[in-house]
Image (cartoon, rainbow, N blue to C red; front, side, top):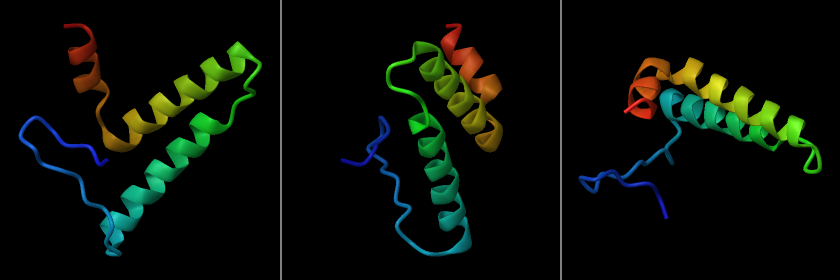
Length: 72
């Protein structure tokens, strides 16, 4: 199931224009980062999560908005 916001709008990045391909590439890299941990090492898991969050915040310019939401 694809993500829908509260208004029922759904993401659709199945096309092949340069913007859609770049967004998919960035998200694929975030998934790779989040999966690049040792399952049996909590420090490794924490590193992957922190690195994944930082990567997404940097590439989608959302750090300030995320901090506002998480501090509410």
